[in-house]
Length: 136
Image 1 (cartoon, helix red, strand yellow):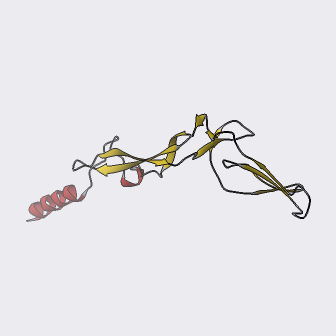
Image 2 (cartoon, rainbow, N blue to C red):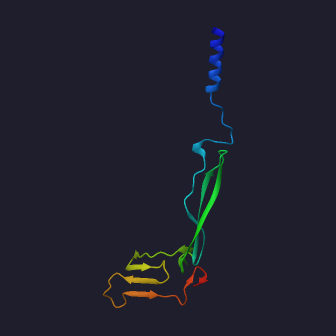
Image 3 (cartoon, helix red, strand yellow):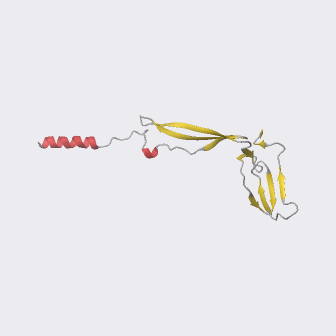
């Protein structure tokens, strides 16, 4: 009877001990996470947004899926006048010494601090909308 009890005890112990994880499987906390959308390509009139999601297969392996979509608009991206790099157009006005300037859009505007002055607004318009090397 003691032999039967000891044998049953070792069988139960062997069943309850978890198997070691193979080195290439990893744990759930180490599984790749979905990424956020980011711009991966841009030109004068379009941005390509992309992210990676992971699908779990029946085998437990996680397969990456690439999701993307285009964003299009006339002169969506412009060339930064300071750096010459492409940047997304932004409708923002920056406060500078003596007034304000809006230089991140299709048109450039300089505003004097006192709008009652003779030349309070200086507007620069492009000959043609040249957006990031493309003519719109």
